[in-house]
Image 1 (spheres, helix red, strand yellow):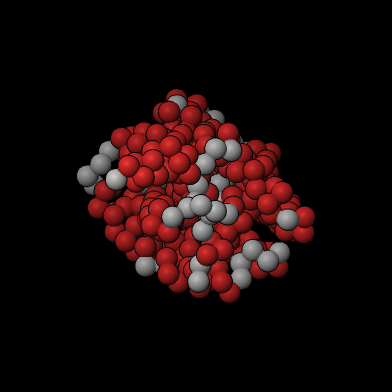
Image 2 (spheres, one colour):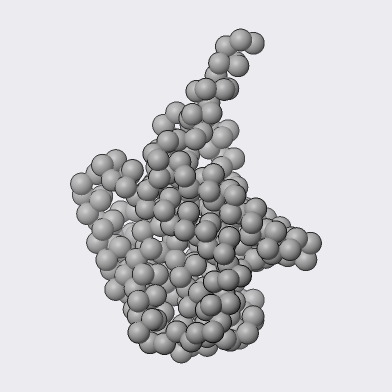
Length: 281
């Protein structure tokens, strides 16, 4: 039933494992740790799925996660900062939607490698950001990003979010510079992403990314959201955020580098190690 969602040559067991881990990471990120560590989900799933299916599958699930986040932070928001990012993000969303329309018209296969490399570069940059996060936040803490920065950050957020749901670090850095305090920071960021993701949805439907088969596939995965949220809350009080972020950094590098080099790590391992071993048994 879900064969179009499975990457060529990927065994079903590995497919479901990587996709399941990707969704759980999103739940953990939203409920237990700040900083956009859910970005790991994109390269993780792109190792086992076509790129357009990854982007389409995640959007409805991200919206559900956003609603859960704003329910818990419904009073923790600063509309001025939300609108400072959201309004310019509309231009980025339009540009990203047009690009997806163009890719769909020309054929996704022709642009799959470019999209993977785009995601891989963002993933590597995010891993480096985690590595230097304390210094980066110290630098941002001395600044107060104003309207001009908001327009740039908002436009980039809309575009990167539309192309690969990867605007987390951009929005987080801008919001952190506003010195709102932890609760307002988390809540304002959650409300910002809810508006961006809801705005993306009709465009994703219009360009043919989100269809009935995608929604059906999401119904199979939706139960992983509360599981990830539970794990996030459980881990929040038991694992230091710095330790968790550095662990995520390692996995982001492992998943991101193959996207840049266009080497499917899963198929390589299967070809070089697993299948020869099976032949000798």
